Length: 445
Image (cartoon, rainbow, N blue to C red; front, side, top):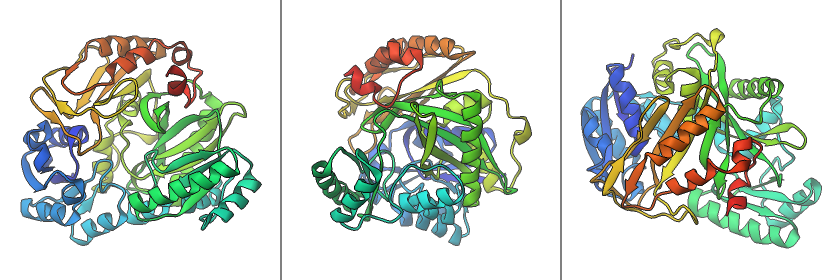
């Protein structure tokens, strides 16, 4: 096993990685910005290094400072968590070029799947279903209009280099496409340094379903079930559950087989997620993108399959076999994750502030992965995620009941908080029925 690990991230995911590393006897190094000096993960690591000011470009995205911290502390490996540098192929290559172990997929796989158009083409060649769309970037609006005429309106306009629900727009007609094309291209150039635009079919009623894969050290790729991620605001996830209430045994077999083919197509190693759109009207699913990192929502898979994905990441990176038998995977029960964000529960606008009270729920089947505590401060410099509340039950009914009780027992004072939103979702008839789609939040508002 790896002996020492630098965690190139912050907040709840840094704490979560540190927790597993400590259980395995791995020495941990945290890097932090000046704004995060008082957060729990800094104190919980065996050693901590400040890598810069609050601005993430000067701290958590500062590859030079992070590598210097790894060298000065004698870290053997680097775990990037999610966000920041986690899907930066150049950083992955630099880590390995400096003699360190990269706890993630290879840089070639990150590069291959980082461009949505290239990824779509690779998946189509591998026999993974893809929705109708462009096979090359739409270089100008006339090319986008030609593509839309072939695909049929409405269409989705997407930044080819985007991710996390950012850089997307929907166009119902030619006039809207002209507007959205310019908007998405401008956003993509500003945020990703790449203005390439993809046009693909838009499904007015669709579910967002993803499959957790793990590329093992021996070259095999295994699928660890699916997650339902359709409770979203602005194309960004708020609640995830596993298994999906929309997936039959037959559909699950097809989903998981396609996800394995996707991983094998790029010789995938370590943890990753194959995201798909599921059209409930036709019963068909289509490849959306592959996230070449650990997902925020990985705990629901851990609870359903009884494993630790961070441990499995470390084992793969060290060239070790998995801690579970891939031939004997057996899901049990149902898990739900709620993203507890510092944001208004109605309009979902960020609301940072000092945390004056923080009481986490507990009990059977309840888990909290948190990044904050009373006396800390949620600053405006980073993502609004404060904690993840995850529950597990024998079935979906019990999981929902436990989620309701846990939400009621979770106290956060100071920053704005979306806990009241989750209390509303968990009583919503559409959600309870399991027959919902990505428009559920809009209908609730």
